[in-house]
Amino acid sequence: MNRRIFNHVVGVSLTLALLAAGGPVLAAEEAPDALIKRSSTEVLDSIRADKAIQAGDMGRIMALVDNKVMPHVNFTRMTAAAVGRNWRQATPEQKKRLQDEFKTLLIRTYSGALSQVKDQTVSVKPLRASPEDTEVVVRTEVIGRGDPIQLDYRMEKTPANWKIYDLNVLGIWLVETYRTQFAQEISAKGIDGLIAALAQRNKANNNGDKKS
Image (cartoon, rainbow, N blue to C red; front, side, top):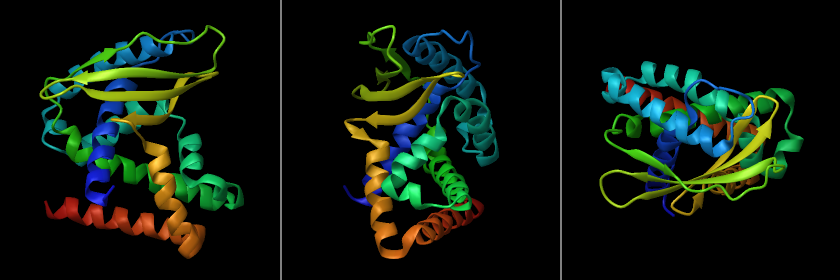
């Protein structure tokens, strides 16, 4: 998959993840599919009501992500999985920098797509899981203009309710795709090289935002 198509897929997947990850957490025993269904409606309504987000205001988007999305994502697990076996060799400082840069990358990747959210709805499919399961896959379809978009979530049960740790859009798992990219960078330049590459990419994106 070329970089342009991959970035588009990531943008769509993360935008739609926002739709299903936001909203206040209710009781800790709320089922994962119920959490996705409830919060998707709440966040869709919030986006439609916020003209600044629809216009692509990066500050508003960043605030929405930090307040609504990140509390529902196990970001440490997501970053560790994307880095792969090299995560164990990283120092605490390197791990922190990887998480910070990866988070910024993901936010900026879908910031433009977020402003395109209009009249989509989310259909949650019946959950195939047992009550004792601590990891599940919640399968959904996002319905709007054009064909429905398959969007699946890998979720884990934690003391702080269910959290997302991977996304599948149109058959492509986000973490697996990034793992391939990151492994190539680490193989060539090491963990510090990956951090530098992510930082440079985020800096370039930031400069692009200022020019727009």
